[in-house]
Length: 236
Ligand SMILES: C[S@@+](CC[C@H](N)C(=O)[O-])C[C@H]1O[C@@H](n2cnc3c(N)ncnc32)[C@H](O)[C@@H]1O
Image 1: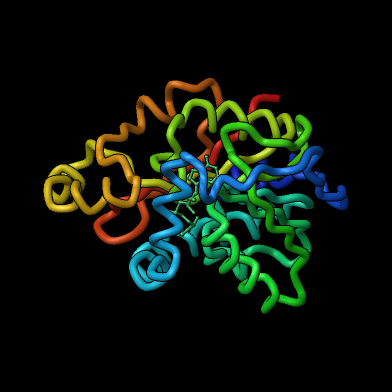
Image 2: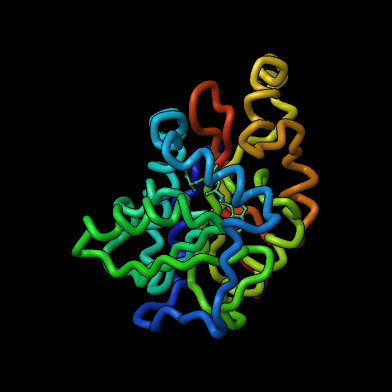
């Protein structure tokens, strides 16, 4: 189903403009050398990430940023910003914050954001399952290719709904298992996917439909429609 333009316009009216991006309210522990499996995995992967996952996941990122530009949010949070591959596509009118657990990935995101002088971008290390932002901080929250990587996706969902304003927009980009194309490829990609912390068994019904947010639009993206872009309205 293509992204519903009416729903996009509807959502756009919900987005407030001009608000300051909130800053973190406490200092951040450096998890890079700690027990965090995600940080360890992405410390190893960071030098190769753009080569391995830049182009192949780019069509989904491009659709996501197109949706965000149509919404024109005043404040935008990207959860799991990684090396910052989506940053250039966001509207330069937004105050943008990108967070990630991995310092190695964030170092690359900082370099990227420094090459975008027209954008206002803050990059911070933070666990998205336990964010230091106050409630209702952002008009829009994007979650590209993170939900199936984070150790406890339900905690992450709880947190993004808390920091997103009531009636604001949450955009999730992820693969979900169960489609015919995924079933065919699952065996081939399983070991590689799990090596980078990507769950291969990840169901849309359990991860998206189980929550009481409203699905505004759902669109298959990337090769063979293996990923899905899900546009959600946060509860008012
Ligand atoms: C597959 S990469 C996606 C990166 C980027 N969004 C992209 O489009 O390529 C997943 C990223 O999510 C981050 N991540 C996973 N769990 C996280 C969490 N709980 N809090 C913050 N970042 C997390 C990882 O460190 C990694 O950089």
